[in-house]
Every structure is written in C-alpha cells, then in structure tokens.
Amino acid sequence: MESTREPEATGTADVTGGQQSTSRSLQTIGDFARAVGLSASALREYGSSGLLRPAHVEDRTGYRYYGLDQQQRAIWIRRLRDAGFRLRTIGTILDSEPATAGALLDDWLAEAVGRADSAAALVDDLKAVLRSRSETPRVSRARVDSAVLAAAVRQLARPKDTDTADPPLDDLCVEIRTDALTLAVTDGFMLMARMRIPAQVDAPSAADGAPGPVGASTVVTASALISPLIQSTEVAFTIAVTGGSVDRPEQVHVSLEDSDGESTTLTQPDRGFPDIGRTVEAAVARRRGRSRFRRNEILRLVDETAGRSPGTGVFLPGESERFELSVASLTAIAEAAVGDELICDWGGDADPLVWRAPSQPDFVALVMPRRV
Image (cartoon, rainbow, N blue to C red; front, side, top):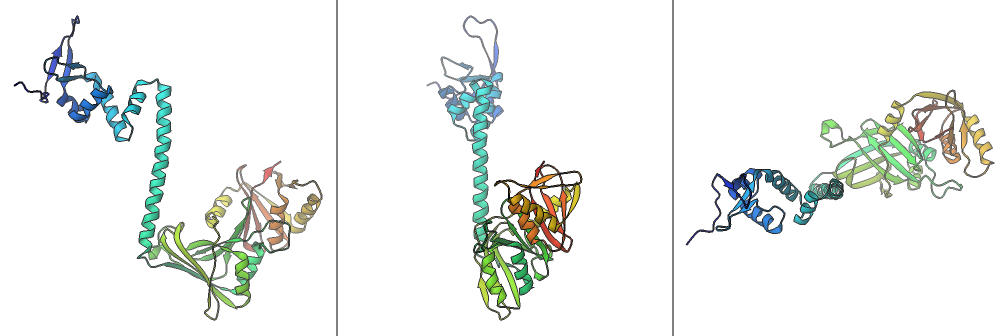
C-alpha cells in the first residue's frame, strides 16, 4: 500500500503546471513549516480554510508544496494568531485594502490596551490584598498642638454646616511626610494648602524600606475634626496603611488620639487629591513673573465685582499680565491668607496662579485664571 504521509524531509520540487513553460521552486510542507515557525498540522488547517493554500498539491499523492513567496504571509498569520486574532479576521486583514486593514488593527489595539490595563489593575489589586493579610501596617503619625491644627483647619476648610452661600470645602487632604504635616482643600478649580504645619512627625522613610513616596496621605472630613480638637491640648494624627503602595493604599485606617489617650476613628470621603507637594513644586518651577497686591485691594475688587451680573470674574491688573478669576476662588484665598500682602506668581497659559502670603510662608493657593 502506498503511504499517504507527506514528505517532511529537506528538499524542493520543480513543478510545471498545465501550459506553463517555467518551473517554480517549492518547499515541502515540513521545510516550509520549519521556515515560518508553524506546524504542518496548522498549515493543513490554514489550507483547508483558504487562509493559506498550498502553491501545489500533487494529484497522485496529495502532497502539499509551498512557494518561497508565501513565507511572509505565513509569518504574518502566525504572529496575528499568537496575538489572539481569529482566522477569519486574519484573512480579512491580509486580503483587504490598507485603510480597511488599518482600521481593524486600530480597533483591536484599543481593545487590547484596555484588556491589558484591566489585567494589570486586577493583578495589582489582588496582590495588594494578598500582601495585606500578612503585612504589618505602615504607620505615619504627626503629633501636633490642638489649637494649631484647629486654626489651620478653620483657615482652609469651609464645613458643610457653615452659614454661607459659597459651596463647602469640607474634604480635607492630610499628608504626613517625614519632615512635615500638610493640609489642603480643593473645589476642583482652586487648591489651598498649609504646607508645613508645626508637628512632631514619625513616618516611614526610604531608609525603612518604605515602598513608593515616604509617609502617607488621606482625605478626611474637616467638620469632623473640629470637635475632638477643642477638647484636648495636643493630638496625634495617625494614618495606618496596609497593602498596596503609599500613593494608592488598599486599606487605610485614620485616627485622632487626644492627650488622654482616647482615639477617634475618622471617616474618609471617597474623594481623590493630587500629591500636594509635587503639585505645588511643579507650579512654582514654571514661574515667569510675579505681582504683589494688598489684601484690602483684593477684597475691594471682589466687592465691586459682586455687584455686577452673575458669573462676572474679578479682573486683576498686573505689571505685564492681566487675569480674570472667579469671585468665589479669590474670596476664599483673600480670606484665608494671613497678613496684609499677597504675592501672585504666574507662569504659562496652561499654568495656575500661585498665591502666597509673606506673613505665613507655608500658605499657598493655586487657581486657574483666564488671561485677558
């Protein structure tokens, strides 16, 4: 009986078909498979589906032969198949006009990137949870005078129960770094912060092997802080992080301990804040000019603007720039700043104004203006 197994030994065949007078050098299925990184069985499947038909099939034996000019198509098929494409889609891509094929590839790439991002987030989240089961919490603690902390909270925040028409600023970001305690509030357009509140800080450092940025940060409700602060002379603000990284903690416990040792757990609003230190440093680094204002002058401009039509901003004159700011933002900054002088640093068109008060060097406010 004659064998039906196709030849896979190294070699080529010269085939003359029909009325053709020229010969074509072909490879056996085995040689071709090894050259393009596919199996012989895969080539048979692709031949049956029409994706990659053999250049020649012997009538008597059924042996398949492939041309050297088919290798590139075979390689593209292998690479697309490895990337997860279906055979029908691969055929459409390879046989379509460039614009159609490009659109299919762009759609697939967008989906692949989305799947990769989701997979990475899933792996990071699950690994963080698994680590948290056995990790010792990383504790950052800032011991501070109650009156000092209460004054800073009142200076920046506007609790929800405040009798004012302005929107509240009740979500308070607290950053405990190795050398400073920072508080900040934001309404999405304006950010105000006290960068270095006097405190005795004990936070993980790089020398302790802390992952990511040292220290910790979280968000608490400002109105919930006031009551514990007025009942004690000194408090310890503690952020305990378990799992994940310091910038993106998976489990965070925030507490305030008074001078009698009684601890109050603080609730954490579902609100994200940028890294306050880095955000301020980036804005300061892009400074191009500076203007100085008297605090009374700012409040006068606010009062004059308040009597105009709703939505009108405050126009601030400058030595070489003129800006328009919202009444709410400028009012909040002027009322929070300490002292009679305000300094305004400005940068490029896409950069925020950086407001400072010389009488209180750690006070800073960032607000996006409109140039006029």
